[in-house]
Amino acid sequence: MNHRDLTVGAALPEIAATTVRAEDIKLMALILRDPNPIHFDLDAVARAGLGDRAVNQGGSTMAYMMNHLAEWAGSRAAIRSMTCSFRGNVAAGDNVVTGGEITGVEQTAEGTVVRCDIWAEVVGGPRAITGSAAVVFPEV
Image (cartoon, rainbow, N blue to C red):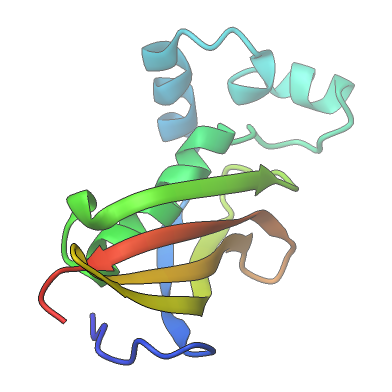
């Protein structure tokens, strides 16, 4: 991923993160010991008024954004901070895309610190998560 256009207003390349699979949602619920039935019980999803598909964990959707930043910067260690606001659900079968826009660039002793607004959204649907991040590029 080309990260050389580090100017305010430049868009991060959008990345199609994944097609969310019900099996993965259920597996994450087991790994995390997440007892919320909307991740694995379709009757509970319907009773909650959330449709008819398992709902992805917010943290899993947030991880798509972290993976995006790590790929863009070339390393997970480059991510200095990240904040998120969970605004909508991602369900099994949804395609998720992540992106962002550079909002600030600062030269520091550590390197070039790039601040950006970031997001994850359902293709053809709403933004599920919005946030901001700071990423450092030591070699720039």
